Length: 176
Ligand SMILES: [Zn+2]
Image (cartoon, rainbow, N blue to C red; front, side, top):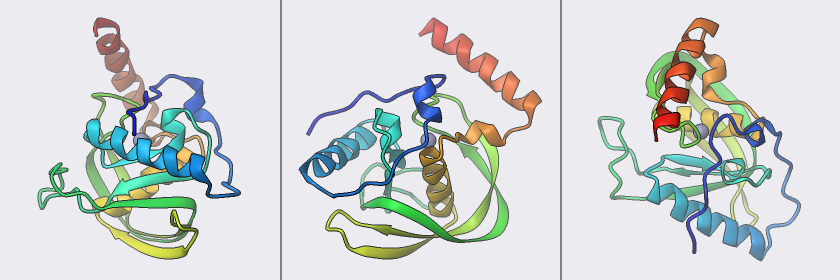
């Protein structure tokens, strides 16, 4: 396994629409292994293939990596792999505080999301499954799915708020 480079904003790659995976072969399995290692190394809760530069409809979510306070506890991992996912159902709006993204390091913002997201996808063995994510896991599904469509969570902010946060983001990135 190896740790991959994460594509960061404003790289235009993040705006690409990802393509369906036609065959789950050794290359896909290797990609998933590397994505898992990369996500854990960077203390992420989810990662989409496009974030490591691969425009395929695939993302992973650490299903158990969330403590009671909603923060990733980084101890227990239960990595779910979603291949060619489809959102089946979204329910109940709520406000999620402090959403972040490995492709926008150190930028966090309150984003309005649905509380429950139900998704259908294929796992690594090619088996179709359905899964319902609530609260932060529902948010993670919506967030990762949007990566496949070339969307980012900052798109949901008001133009004023977005401009402000991106100015800060660019300033910080320049100093790093
Ligand atoms: Zn993200």
